[in-house]
Amino acid sequence: MMGCVVQVAVCGPASATDAELTHARRVGELLAERGVTVLCGGGGGVMAAVAAGARSRDGLVIGVRPDDGTSPGPVADVSAVVVTNMGQARNAILVWSADAVIAIGGSWGTLSEVALALRRGGIPVVVLGGWRITDATGAPLDGPTYVDTPDQAVRRAL
Amino acid sequence: MMGCVVQVAVCGPASATDAELTHARRVGELLAERGVTVLCGGGGGVMAAVAAGARSRDGLVIGVRPDDGTSPGPVADVSAVVVTNMGQARNAILVWSADAVIAIGGSWGTLSEVALALRRGGIPVVVLGGWRITDATGAPLDGPTYVDTPDQAVRRAL
Amino acid sequence: MMGCVVQVAVCGPASATDAELTHARRVGELLAERGVTVLCGGGGGVMAAVAAGARSRDGLVIGVRPDDGTSPGPVADVSAVVVTNMGQARNAILVWSADAVIAIGGSWGTLSEVALALRRGGIPVVVLGGWRITDATGAPLDGPTYVDTPDQAVRRAL
Amino acid sequence: MMGCVVQVAVCGPASATDAELTHARRVGELLAERGVTVLCGGGGGVMAAVAAGARSRDGLVIGVRPDDGTSPGPVADVSAVVVTNMGQARNAILVWSADAVIAIGGSWGTLSEVALALRRGGIPVVVLGGWRITDATGAPLDGPTYVDTPDQAVRRAL
Image 1 (tube, helix red, strand yellow):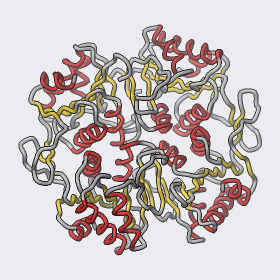
Image 2: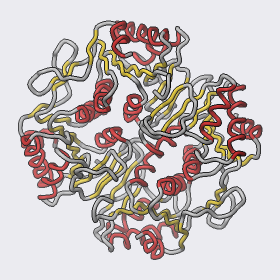
Image 3: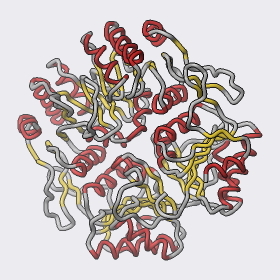
Image 4: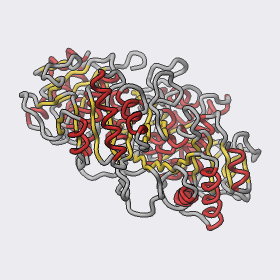
């Protein structure tokens, strides 16, 4: 995004499985090791796990929060926080700020980020263990790249 | 929404099939006949068709546009227009303003509206001839109500 | 805005003086009598007064609310409501949707609407009894049109 | 903001005087020397100058841009960029993300940031060489802290 800095948004549910959290942490590590800035939603679950992974490798992590910054509950360990106070409209900001989007796990919020990223177009949208989208006949749709491991996710994103 | 006025957001692609346009127009007619205010994206395709249907029955139609109001191209025939200048973040506004959401046809923008509506929760989200969402194993997800006709769509929304 | 419909945003504080409320109601009446659609913030005070005035003349009033639609407290009597869930970022939406802006009375939120309207440019921005802005030396700035009566406000806006 | 990281938004026009640019650069230096993260609008003028100042002291600078990231023209030299694609509605995001706001120089966009910050309340809002706001009688309003030097600005902000 803008010059030589690469920024990847990593999206996923606040309520995540252990496997999803492990994946998210590993994605954060791999991105930070490659000098990539991680954007996340600034909350718990996948958001906190990817932040922790990136920070463990001295990566830069920007949390883009939906609330007004006063919500209780888990907050990702971020280098800086952008407080949108715009609810899930912040998902559009995450997507616009990213050179690639990686979605880990499934939730309606995460799906909206995948959809907004594909609506924007022009950037890789990688889904790791998340939901599937088909047309009305059940046929898969072009757009998302489905992968099974953090290594594949990061490779396809960059 | 706020008192006795019912507002239904009708979403769908700017590039739509003839069947989708016919469906959208009929949904607009049915909603207006019931005194329901129609919210749409203010653009062409499904957005223009639902607006035309509602207006043909003297319905109130609010177009919530993503651009700054100066874009060329088809514009829905609306009673009033809200110009968000926020791109697809306006999808979140459509969803928050509605007592129910009806999606007609499939597109990434439309999918984002379905996802944002289900993320919000608490309102009917009806999909007429649009895309399907499953979990990673291909199992359908609770949330959207899939229907085949405009009559079913309106009945399930209200 | 978009064709022949004219839309005017009328802004002002939720906590208003009696004179401001009287002015707002009269502005609403005058706009509706001219077939102009009124946009307001959907809350109490000036917002409710302009809505009441316009509705008393069978005018169309769109309330563009900052919250998620569940806030307690006064709500303007509107024809339709757009729920942005974006806090005061909705002020930018009001401004972008309007062919002219009339500010009645002073508050920081109202001032932000005046400033955003002048930042956008190209539309009349009329201030009725509200705050003044000067440069660092105290000299008045071009941009706002200051007026003393509802009649002047509406005449300068249209 | 959220824990021990302090974030200060520095606002000002893209078209700035030499004195404003010098002030902005110095404010950036002073903030970075104190370990404060600088938020700015990501554009030219004051935005670029404060970014350059902070970066010259190894500070963290987040640019929160109004456009979709593809605009030509000057871009602040930032550590990370958040692309809102929301026009001047991003001013609300800058304000919500900050523990204090410093405005340098005057413009309608800058004034909207001052107004939005005071509408939010609870944080210092410091104006260095910028516009003045009075009530309808010309009396100054409580809220902004007017200062003359970068040192005063940073001292009052923190």
